Image (cartoon, rainbow, N blue to C red; front, side, top):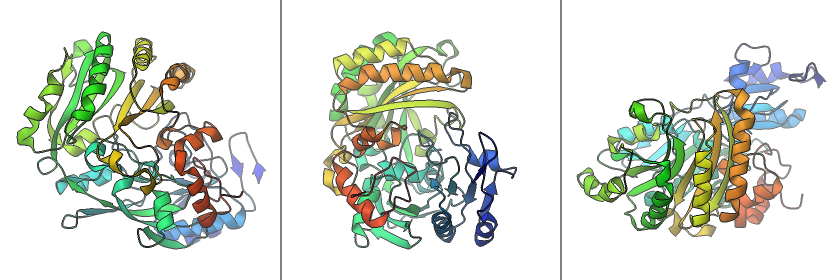
Length: 472
């Protein structure tokens, strides 16, 4: 390896041309025009220079990259949607296994299943499943990659009714650290299947997922949208929300947050930029009952905006994509919360008043209902219960504001953290050290480490929220 600048490294003795000729997909290197676009990820704070980026066409390409990286001592990064908070899907001097060209989605309406290639976003999936009147539990942003969200847990609008994404995973095609291709499900490689459901990208490269689908709304049309309140109403709204949510029908779910009202339609122009407390609701039951079931949440308090209406589920899922395009500056901090305490509410109100930029926000996502009824030992996702996963995000388009949004996020988290459970959702984790990695995997960590030792004893897949092989 010969370093030619502080940002780029050339690998004069590594035969990348040999790898390139073995791939059906493209191999992108620093001299190629596509390189800067290919190395960019969702978080604009991440600016890394991999040795090469393999835009894989299929599982055979993935296997070739793994073998090549191991043979030549090159770190392997795995990229699906590139949405991860820490940007670990790209790394300096690594070979990036980029799945973004693998975007097939096939739905089976009779079996209520969907098969999804590893490079898909949830928008790719929703367009196909919603057209069939169904959906698979996912998250809240359509541009999120399927792989990262699914392997870490998957908390979203459908969690209370149908569980987490990992609860709906039926099988996965996986390329292992030695280049072998296997199918993991309840019958074949059951330990690996358990580990994939919450253990993140530690065990192999998943090139295809098979998920359960569920009928929602009326042929995929649901009733949802935001209800926004003035920041002065935050204490009253949060206290009401924490009490009312567990008793609502599981067809109705809603996350709560603090935000600035976006300066764009359909929000009234006189409210643009105003600090607010908001709940985004989603009702997935029969539409002829939507008005009745949602009346209590639409009519509570004195909202500034009631934006609930009928829409296809994929429209709700993609509602925030335009506000948060790829390339913004992001800084995250997160925790799980068993309850929303009065002290936490005080902290939320303080930092809403100090909101540093229009894109910055805090969200609390519920993990109750169906997700809470799954035994904790059934999957590697270890944080079930009638609580919330919360995330604080400092966000802005301008790199000049990176320090400002980082300082706000850290200060907010430091005051809020004592009110949490001590655990953290792995999909919201930045690079925060070994202790926080253990916090993310919780009671599953030791079992995950043993499975890691079986399937990846040399820790080939370590550019992630890493689980070290047991005994290493």
